[in-house]
Image (cartoon, rainbow, N blue to C red; front, side, top):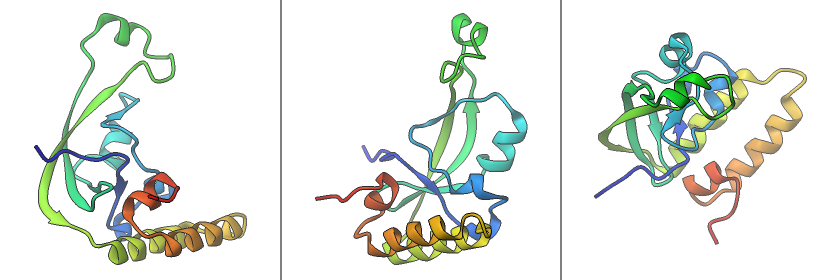
Length: 139
């Protein structure tokens, strides 16, 4: 079975709202029940996994455990499972690099330009999507 290889990152930087869209998802969950966060950043958005396969988030499943709901305020306890649909499309490394770099540049400010340039340099030197998302070499 062909499964998502996490972490995953949002693609199509032209539709990103802010720097939060730059953050990868490290598993198939979000840790908030906020409808606004879900609809602004996740729902019907496309993500690429470490292999370049593109997925669309089509829904979510709220926790059913009493304890998860009761202790919603404890970090990482309230986990909303995301439902992914494979699109059947892939993204090539160079296209992913261009899109991610465009997103970084779009949200650079005078305070973040130095770290943004360092990040862009790392992306440009990466040899795989997995290396970009994990922040380390595949070797």
